[in-house]
Amino acid sequence: MHMARKYEFKPDKPTSGLLSKLFLTQQQRKVLLKWVLYSLMLLFLSVLQDVILCRFRLFGATTELVPCGIFLICLMEGLEQGSLFSLCASCLYLFSGTAAGTYSIVFITGLSVIITYFRQAFLRKGFSAAMLCTGFALLVYQLCVFGFGLFLSLTTFGRIFSHFLTALLTLAAAPALYPLLRVISTIGGESWKE
Image (cartoon, one colour):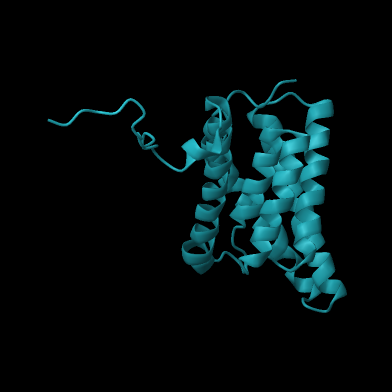
C-alpha cells in the first residue's frame, strides 16, 4: 500500500497559449488584437496591390492601397497612436519594396500627422471627414512623389497625369476599406473619444 506524503511535489498546472505568459489583461489583449489585425490588413492590401492590382493599369496609373490604409488607420486612431503607427507602417511599406523610395516614409508619416490634426481640430469624426482627409493626403502624397521624382530626374513632367489618376483611383477604393478598418478600430473600445 502506497501512502502519499504530506509534502509531495506537485507540478504546475499546464498553461494554455503564448499570451497567458505575458500577463495581459483582457482589455490589453483586445488592443493587441486590434493592432495585429491592422497589420494583417495592411499586409493583405500590400499583397493585393502587388499581385493582382498592379496588372491593371488605366492610362499608366494603378492604385496605392497601402498608403490609403495607413492614412485611414491614422485618422481612426488619433494623433498619438496613429502617427506612431504610420511611422512604423511606412517603414515596413518601404521594406516591402513597393514604396517609391525612402522619402515615402517622410511623406506618409508627415501627411498622416497633418490630416489627423486637421480632422481632430476642424472636422467631426465620420465617413465624409475621413474620405475628405484621405483624398487630400493621397493627392498631396502623389504630387510629392512626383515632385521628388522630377527633382531626382526619375520621371518626366508628362507623368503628372498618371500620378493624379493614381490618387483618384486609390480614393475610389477607399470607401471599401473604410468599413473594414472601422470594424477593426472598435475592438478593445472606441478609439475616437473627442
